[in-house]
Amino acid sequence: MQTALGILYPTQCASCRSFVEARDSLCGTCWSETPFLTGLVCDCCGVPLMGEEAGARALCDTCLETPRIWARGRAALEYRDNARRIVLGLKHGDRIDLARPASKWMAAAAQDLLTPDTCLVPVPLHWLRRVRRRYNQSVLLARGIAQITGMDHIHDALQRTRKTIPQDGMTPAQRHANLADAMRPNPRRESELRGRDVILVDDVMTSGATFTAAAAACRAAGVNTISVLALARVVKDF
Image (cartoon, rainbow, N blue to C red; front, side, top):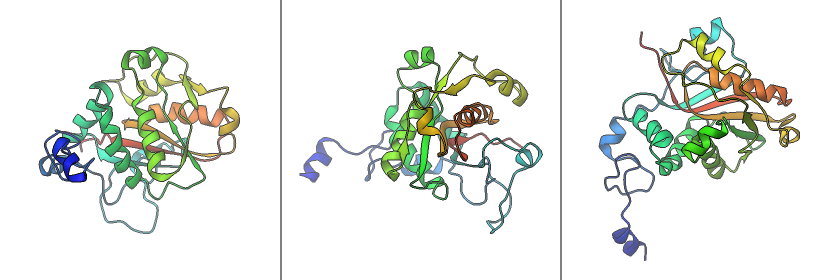
């Protein structure tokens, strides 16, 4: 039966859709063009760091200079090359099938953050943007991670209170100003969030402004500790 299904419905590369042996995997070419984040990373924002992994907690210069509102952070990919194509396909190209392999990569990247008592909370979209896009990619990712790990997730824990303008080309300060007070806890979910440890889930982290706004909303709901998890991390050129 499995052989027959494999002939009728051959497995495809999660990115380019060429034929591969395993479901939710990448072909050799796409794998080589996908920059997975490995090795030493900032424990707070997930950006890669120079040096080898050690026992002590490592932080990037940005997180040292300006402490984050959350405690720890991870990302699965660096936002460039095929990782960028994957994110854009999921976000704007109706490639909701990409959420399944992306969730696996994110769960693997955040192994040391995931605990049975922690709740996954996706970053919300404004309702107008959600209607136009027809789905929230962060909800798909959080749901996928929850299915893989058995963790709890609340898909509507937070709400976007106003429609913000696109942040492309903005400075970090402008991004934070654009998102200030743009999110709040869902009044129907506040009791479920109070006292919980939470991992915020989103597709991309650039300056951290979106996660900051979401974390502030979690704080308002009385969340205990907050961590963040992104599919891809924008890395500055040095």
